[in-house]
Structures are given as structure tokens and as C-alpha cells.
Length: 273
Ligand code: HPA
Image (cartoon, rainbow, N blue to C red; front, side):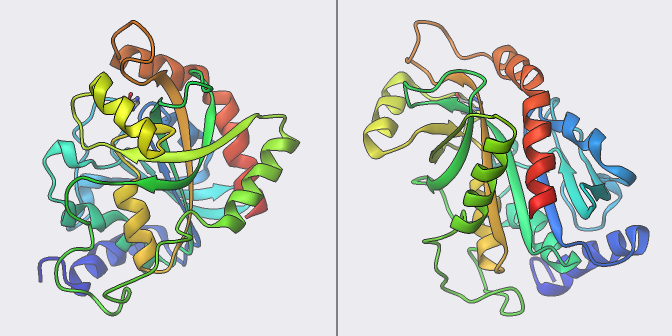
């Protein structure tokens, strides 16, 4: 039963019983970006701990609840608070949320996160569209016996952060007068922030921003045929870029400051999706 199709189905059925109907769009809100969930109208809130077979948030800046409601006229399911490898979950457990989204009917998902800027042209407060990612550490969330009802054993990830959704996001950002960067997200397992030497290596390898989330969700979503849009808020410059330490306070502060900008971007992107 563990990690089998029925396992995910049990979570999805519980959510459907409480929220009803198919939901086409999924949203994941990263550290300090949870405020966006307030924009969801007529929302039903389900605590993660009430959902059978689901996971529980252990991070202070993450709310730990699922919201189902309407955003820009679309029915959405939104995770306010997500799960990370550094919390102690096995990679395979991190497949749960996107597989449950899939069983709820989700076809497109927006993954947001806070990230450190590796690219020295970036500054805190910038918003970066994820064009691709680099993950050189750890296993895959879809490791283990394949579940054919969800997707094939081997699958293509060359257009994971789909071009169509990126083009749509760029067009909406332009309408909103928001300057959108586009770059490669480098996955780090954390919980320690990176060393300056690691950041220099990541820059040489082609990373523009670094963070501890999103990638596990993007891989799982791609496996089950969902389209992914990834948005990073650059909350700080990565280690060693400036002569100062990386702090959680800085990450939270930039998250709060950029709230309005991100809300406008996400609302208009969802409306156009
Ligand atoms: N490194 C990793 N994750 C992060 C950072 C960072 O500098 N900033 C926000 N999340």
C-alpha cells in the first residue's frame, strides 16, 4: 500500500469529499509567500494533518494547509506551506502532494519559492521565471516501483517548465509592468545555506538562483503529465556574493516586501491560464 496508487487515492478522495468537483489548477506557495492564499475566494481550508496519508509541515514560515477555492475565476487547489528534504522526508515521500494534485484533476501547477541570487545581475526583490533546473544531489521523488496509472517509468524532462506557460507569464508580467528575470534554479538540499565555494561552483555550472524546494514537485508533476510554471522570488544574494551572512530574517523580509508584486503576477497569470 505504501506509495501505491491506492495510497495517493485515499488522500485525494478525502479532499474531494470536502471540497467537491474537479480542480484544474494547482498552486504551491513557498516560504513567506503564503499571504497569496488570502486572495482565494470562497475557500475551504483543510489542515494537512487532517488528510489521510498526507505530510505535515514543520517549518515556521509555512502554514501547513490546503486551500480550495476560486482565483481569477478558476477553481484552484493551493498548498500554503510545502515539504522539503531537509525536514527529514525521504525523497519518495515528497512525491505525495503532486500525485494527490493529479488525482484531484490538476493539469497545470504554479510552483513558487524563495531563492538566493547566484546571478550577480539579480538583486533581492527580483522575480525569476524558472527556465530549467539543476539537481545534482540525492535521489528522485519518483524513484521506486513505477505507478503506471500516473506515468511511465522513464520520461522526458526537456520541457518541464513548459515554454507555453513561461511565454504566458512573460506576457502577463509585461502587462503588469513587472520586470521578470528568467534563469536556472539550482537545487540544494539544505537546511544549511550554501558555502561561498558551492555558490561559485553553481554559477560556473549555469545556476542563476539557489533554493531548497520546487524541484521535487516539478519532477513529480512532469512524471504525471502536468504542466509546470516555476516562479522564484530572489530574497537575498546567495552566500559569498556580498560580504554578509545569509539570514532567515532577510528571506522573510523580502518575502513580505514583494507580496503585492507577486500577488499581482500570480493573479493575472492564473486568469490567463
Ligand atoms: N539558499 C538556499 N535557499 C534559499 C536561499 C539561499 O540563499 N534564499 C532563500 N532560500
